[in-house]
Image (cartoon, rainbow, N blue to C red; front, side, top):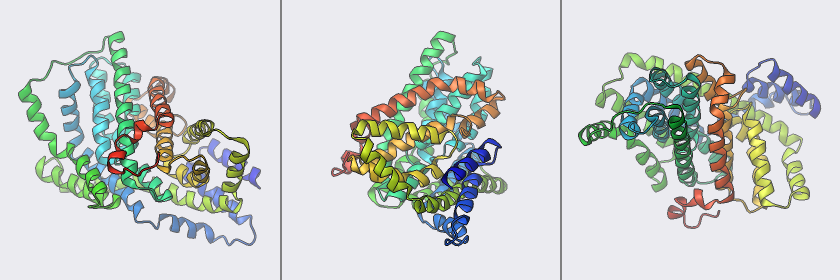
Length: 429
């Protein structure tokens, strides 16, 4: 039965069935084949999988991101980023990366970053002489920072699965996310010098100050969110609700770029995007019931216990495994299915759940820009109107940057734990 289910899984993927439906079908067929488990187990498990206060943060952070895009806050962040890095060779590409880092601190949603920033910057980069693959590659790759720099929706899901501190995960993602962004900027600078990409004039102090004050309400949002969570003022879900309300208020009354007539479109986009993630999560919960019946977690633990004795080898296997899984599955269902399997084994090797979470989330972030799933890559390629093959070729150097930072975090964990140690002195690496 196991081989039949794997075969069915591959066939459904090959014929183009969406991954969320593939997971649900496999769960239903597998449980249906077990005579003493009622079929109603599948919908019950799907409902139970969504019955979580923490999961309310998913649609709320997506709502905050959509409010930023519809309220044209993304454009203001782009303008401010250009004031900071526009004078560097390849300034518009640098601004693309910097605005993704700022956007990540508000929404935690990479797809919303790709859609919002890409619609503005990809055409702008093409007009300034950047080749289309580079414009698409920079936009897609920098969007992955959205799930590394807090707040991050995958981090919230991981915390719910493992009962680790959301605040510790958030703080552990800051340095890796910044390093990824700086690494991408270094790569862009090399490309810009080699290919002669343009740069803007240096901004005057008065212009910079004016732009900073104008964007301060948006830039200050991450400080409020992360500070509130760490200090215990509100939970991650309450922070997501606050982000939505705060973004709505500044868009409507401070910037006055959002109108009430825009809200139906904002809410529709939010429902469509969040329903994809939440349905996949629900289906993964049902499949998790099937995996528990076949005792996959016990098999995995026995395999690693009997065959792997090195912590380094185990981490390399985890990275390679989630790199593979991320090519055809979203981060949320991937974590729902496999984190409960690998977490007990990681604890056998004395690996902190927080460190494991950062490694898995960074690895799955690469899946956002690798075919065939690669949702951020698909969105950017569609905006740039080029093929997936050309887009993937352009994004490959940026994947290497993420992998280098990932290796640094995995094997020199003090890099990621530098900030968390200030707030959580007893945190085990």
